[in-house]
Length: 608
Image 1 (cartoon, rainbow, N blue to C red):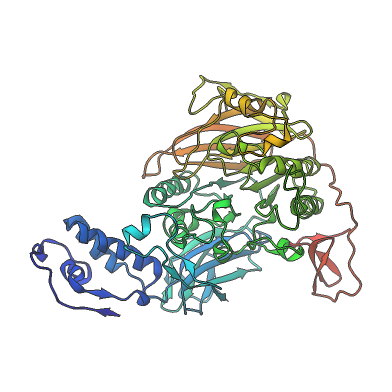
Image 2: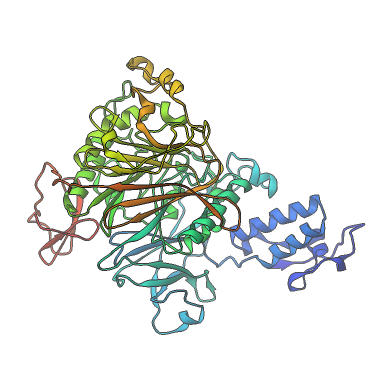
């Protein structure tokens, strides 16, 4: 409810100078007009407060008009926000959805219609599918203002400001393959904007998807640069089927995290992408928080968590799906310390070597016919910038390289290092580049910032090793690529020195960087096209707010040999006690029995 008091500010400039939206006068708003926070959605109210504080400090025409506009943009507390679609299971027939509302708003639905670019009027017809959402109030208040000073200064909020929220989730099933859908969330009188997605074709041919990472939302500049990248990506690849985002959505993790940063990721930075396609997320180290913001915000396949005893911090951070001729293995290494691990020399981790590695083998075993296998994770097995000397990579290499070899992973998409890095293909046995697997590289002048190797483009064959790729950052936080001399200084084979945060244990590390390697110094995204004979990578920088881009690198990933059958090391058989329709865990994985047939976690029938 608006509570209006007409105490005008002494000496205030003539009110008639400023255009007032909805007959609002900026003088009244600034003087003593009170809009109660509990009456409006958290995002719209915060934007109003920011505008009001700016107008208080400087009563320019621009600031006063912005304030009036933000009053007009206030949304009733019943409206949804932070909406997103996520791939959850078989992308031919299923899609997950999540959104937030203010505390106390527990009711809400997902509505879907099989029509591209549907209008509000279309949702009044008979063909609308309505799916009730499951609503969960956050267990604790989520800290709205984190360690970053930007938001509490701009909005004049206390550093410890916290709010309860309601997380809504819905799962659409039995969708029609190869169909464009429009969707919205909310309830009668309080519907969200309309967004789009397309299900995988029954016989999927060539398609493209996006890779963006490490937005690290922390202030307005970071919000704006990530949005610039999202706008450019949608304009450049309007038909992308989904967007992979391997973590570090926000800057402030831990208990002192900032829900405002998450809010801006959904409501502003990535909104252009979210309205066009589903997201394929996993967590990054900066997303880490016991308040489980990540879990509340996404609705992805959670069977991995259900199948292991010592649960990861977040739900739905490790999952797989098949899209066309590619098996996608989305996974998190964040929880490597769970159960037990070698803390001194970091040579083993029960979580990685038992649970994650077994899950890799199972997914590859169950999907033997896909031509490419692509993993997506935040942390790096190999990287060439500031994270190359972190204490974790030697552990990750020790635990995961045998798995990458055994499962014959073609491409490892990584985040975390904020630099553009083309690595390998890497021989998993001795961590050396397979130079015979590379052709058609272009030699260019060495640039000590943007390209330290003097190579770009090229074709990379993954028959004998994995191709590792970091696509820089879609945001503002950028690192400097380490040159050969620095990498050589940082090398050690002494295990007592290795984990000091200043060394790595990869000899001749610089040689692994076999393509373009450097800092683009601009928000960067990559279009990956799945073709009949290759995965084609085209990387772009976003050059302005109009969606203009520069193509910086093009690569082809090829595989000439078919994958060998992956051994899960244990047979799969259905326990006789399981009843039809029940879910059960076998060898650490979740299955379901339907009409005497057994299906895995992504709905595919298991015949052995």
